[in-house]
Figure 1 (cartoon, helix red, strand yellow):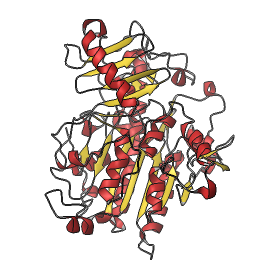
Figure 2 (cartoon, rainbow, N blue to C red):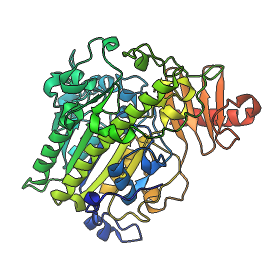
Figure 3 (tube, rainbow, N blue to C red):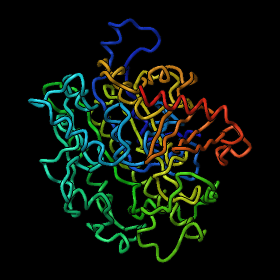
Figure 4 (tube, rainbow, N blue to C red):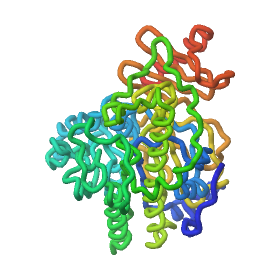
Length: 485
């Protein structure tokens, strides 16, 4: 179901980008928007009202979906922050670890005078920067908020993405540094020992009581500065919001909607049998849980899910502020908006509370692309797409060349017609790899396979690899060919 956007958002009507109905090249180039607003949200499940989950309050993201295109089967390359963001920011498959971008930066440093070469293509923001854009990042875009290394993630000599940003900002406020803000609770509480920090929290205070309020304030200030620039230089503004990442803390008013809400029963909540990527939810379990386990305590499971939902509604409010600012500054008619979740998150499915698996719940995340001339606005597409597709899509929409090599496929055809087919999506984690088709998900271990059929009586619930050896062989070969490109 797609909700109608609130009255405050009805002004977000951007004008023409590209005529997808056959305009000639000269017309298209004259109408192409220059600016890009990229909104990255951490640990966001596709559990939004616009994705069919009625109890979630997400009016601003819903409004964006109503005016753009929601990709209901978008899959990330890796169920972990750093590796997933690597693929978004490079358009290429890459290493599976959180240090992927730092490793890339070290290789980049080998080139003289900080110049890119054909053997080492630019990142997404670097590509736009080289083509005349002002590039600004606020919050968590790469793995570390602010994009720096060091003990507190604020060392200017260690950059995750050198040569990419004119400004790469992370306001830390009471949390002292980006590392503190990443896992911060209300009014400056920093995670020192996870076992002494509550796994969820509601706090009676303003949005700025948590780090995302500061991130949004800085992003609005940067948007004001970029839009008011006298040089008419187009901008690429990336805003990275931390919630609903653990711990699940948000201002208490965002919890009010969920106080008496009926939360749906968790589907497929049993621990899977056999060789899988199941894990013990260590990231979640290490927090203070008051000696309660959501896999064994239904009341606690519901409380955890409601606090996660409150974080989603809190982040949705920040998205609304960003979108309203575009309109206020009169740049909405010249801006493409992309909203992307860096991976999914289990809330009890398969007895997991977290990410880090190659099940559907870890790999499926929201993707919404908005541009002014989109045809059939508000219609969703269930075609399979993947994160590496965002880079070439933004290039095509803005008229920039697509760097070579690029592993992604432009989604512009799906922006024209949401009913056309997509393609397979590849993911990886640890020593396992996976491929998703319209019907199946194959997970390949060194000598064993998992196969899930989403057209079965229990969609995606059971490993049917033994029943369909020909499908396993076909998809295994396809997976190999995709990763060898």
